[in-house]
Image 1 (spheres, rainbow, N blue to C red):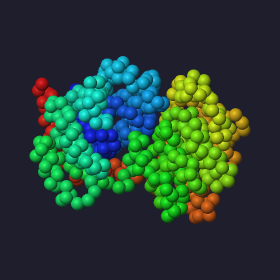
Image 2 (cartoon, rainbow, N blue to C red):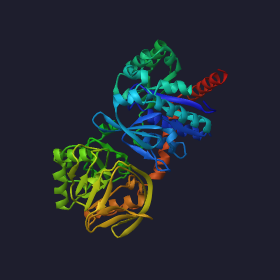
Image 3 (tube, helix red, strand yellow):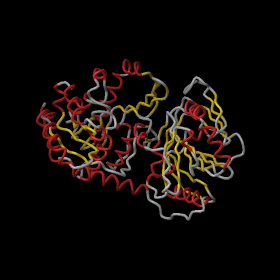
Image 4 (spheres, rainbow, N blue to C red):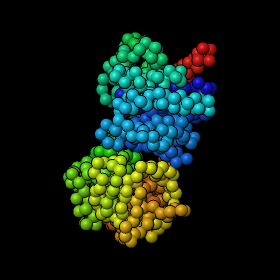
Length: 505
C-alpha cells in the first residue's frame, strides 16, 4: 500500500461503537495536522450519504469525511449493501446500483469482484492521504463468514493495519465478548490486534480496574482506553439497531410532539436528527397505531421498499389513523422520499422491482402518482422552498427509484433551476419532498416549528440552533473526549511500527 499510516477499528458485535470512534479518530488526526480519510470496504446500511458527484455511500463514511474536513468519495466505501426485501439486497458499487442479489449469490459470485474493488480503493486512499481510518463490520470472529469476508481481517491484512478491538460495556459481558473474540481468531489475526477499547462506560472506573488488570494478564493485550458514555452525541447513525433506543412515549414537558413512522424498511431516518436538538421538541418513533396519539408533527421518512412499507401502514392501522389526523386538521404531516410517495394517490411498480404487488393506493393526501423505476436518482439538490408565505433557500440530497408526477392542480414546494420538487396541500398541512436533509436547513426548520407553535397558541422561538455549527462542535467534543481516554501515544507508536515493517518487507 501507499504512504498513509492506517489504523483499523473492529468490534465484538454490531453497534459496539466502531463508527463513532472511527469518526473521533478522523477528527483527532486532522487536529494533529494529518490529511486523513475514512474507509469501510463493505457497508450494509439503509442510511446512506450522497457525494458531491451524486453517488451513494454509507452514511457513516460520509460523516467521517466531514469529521476529517474533506469531501466524501466512493473510494471511502466502494461497496454498499442495501436490504430491500426478504433475503435480497441492492448492491451499490462505487456509488451506483450494480444489481439486486441474495446473500448466497453475493458470497459465491461477487467475492473476487469485491476484492478487486477494495484493493483499488484502499490503494487510492493510502496513496493520497497521510492517515486512513478503517472501520470493520459486525465481528471479526464470525466463523461462518470468515472464508469469504470482505470487511474485517482480510482488509486489515491488505492494508497492513494495526487493529483495535472495541467492546461495548453497556450491553454487559464485555470481558467475555473481548476474550471470546480474541480466542476465535487465527493467531496471525490475533497478533494484528494491538489492544482493546472498552466503550460506553458508566460509573466508577476504580470498580473496573481489577477486570482491566486481569484482562491484560490473561490475553497479553493492552487496554488502550476506557471511554465513558458520552450523552447527547449528535452523530448520524446508519444502523436501524439504534432505533431501539428511541421511545414511543410522549414527553409532556416539551411543547411539540413529533411522531416519526418507523416502518420495517425505514431509511435515512437521520433526516429528523435536528429535532432532537431543539428545546421544545420531543421525537417519538412509532410502530403501532395506538402509539400515534395526537402529534403536532407526523413525519413519514424514507423507505427502501415503499410498497411493502405502505402495506405495513395499512395492516398496522397507522394508515387509517393518519387519514383521521388529517381530517381533524391539527397535525402537520410531512413525507420525505418514500414517505412523500406514500402521501400520493397511488404507486405503480410495473417491473416488480420492490414488490410482486405492482400497484397500491396511497394515502391520497397529495395529488401525486408514482412509478417505481429501475434507474436510481442520486444527486445533491438546491432550490427555493415556499412555505407559509416565505421563501427559503434549501439544500438536500435525493436517493430514490421512482418518478412522481402531479395528477391535479397542485402547489409546488421547491423550485430548482431546471425543475420543481415536492408538493403541498392548499392549507400547507401536508407537504412532501424528495429532499433528504430538508430539516437540516435551519431557517426552514425554524419557520416550520414556529408555524406549528402558532397553531397551538404558543409564542415563536427565535434564533434556534445552527445545526451545521452544532455538528462541528460535536466532532471536536467527541475527538477531545476520546483523546482524553485512550493512549494516543501507544496507538501512534504501533501505527509507525506496522508501517515500518511493511516498508522493509
